[in-house]
Image 1 (spheres, rainbow, N blue to C red):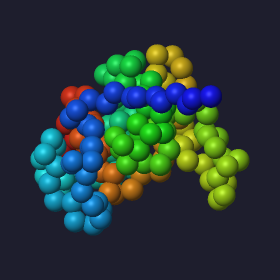
Image 2 (cartoon, rainbow, N blue to C red):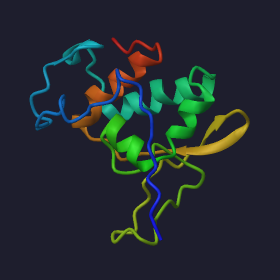
Image 3 (cartoon, rainbow, N blue to C red):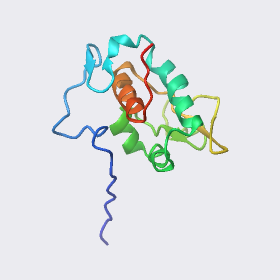
Image 4 (cartoon, rainbow, N blue to C red):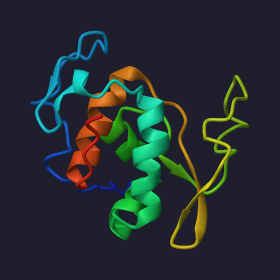
Length: 144
């Protein structure tokens, strides 16, 4: 029996393929090509996710096709650098498989097209540049 290979198409400006991949230490990120200087946004990545990302998803600024991709753990890893899908239908995503038995999603759900979803809470500062790039890609500026 042959295995099927699933190919996901990711927009070029948010895909970080092997030719663009650099060692990301997370400590000294100075500049991001899309959003300008990262130091211009003093907010922590979790706060950016809970405010700007939540607002973008709830306001309808993100297409249905893009929202569907946000449930994919591989897309979320490539696009945001997080280890879980950005969105989940329930807060208990893989809690039984999680050795620490921790919740990986914020407790308050977000509403997208009248349906409730949970936003991933597992953000690290090294993911900040990728989150700002994606927000810029959908037309949201986060310069505080």
